[in-house]
Picture 1 (cartoon, protein in one colour):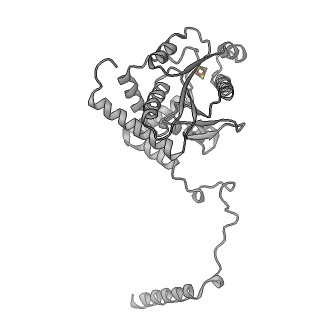
Picture 2 (cartoon, rainbow, N blue to C red; picture 1 turned 180 degrees about the vertical axis):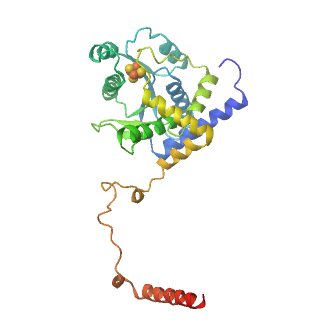
Picture 3 (tube, helix red, strand yellow; picture 1 turned 30 degrees about the horizontal axis):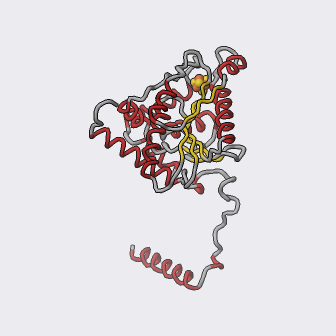
Length: 289
Ligand code: SF4
């Protein structure tokens, strides 16, 4: 941004800082001495994540390091100079991992099939390897509230699972803690923030992959709901933080088999008196009626 930030922008920035700070606190995402790797793709979400974390770092009660990391996947037309120039201008420590996952994916996946599954696995592998070799204690990703809600519906509609994206999780091999500090932030606010900041956005379809049609359909469904019933996406996200296992149906996470009513004989004397009294007053009510 070239001119002075407007009051509206400052309010938006304070809003984002507040939500990110709260998510970090709620899930204890960052602790004293952490070395946090911020994964940058060049999209609006990861730029916003880095920007807000840098701003929180200046006022946080704990000291932590930030290292920005980008994986250059060697996609045709990737403007390799954009991120280094931007990161130099911020003065933030950074590293560009160069790994040609693009050729691998192109070679392995038949033409016309979606490449995203293999591409993401290779990317994750490269980032985890860098983290392990560089003393990284937390890996920060730019997923936001709407990504989390979309993933919930994707898993329900196409996978038969009640599963979303956790704000904090342990990698499958147990070696890395992944955090999503934007978990409480709505995508539209990130888009507004990125516009206001004028981040040098790198287009995201350089790989030529088709858009994930299932995710696009879910996005459209949520946008339509949001238009008809403003606040619905937030309500769904709140539901993820307010789970009642006894009112779902998974016997692996709730002991339905062990549920038994207490036998009357097991009542205390006081409970028996209270029951007798209530039955008496019920009888009186019937007689009176
Ligand atoms: S859109 Fe392209 S770069 Fe992104 S995960 Fe899919 S294949 Fe990889």
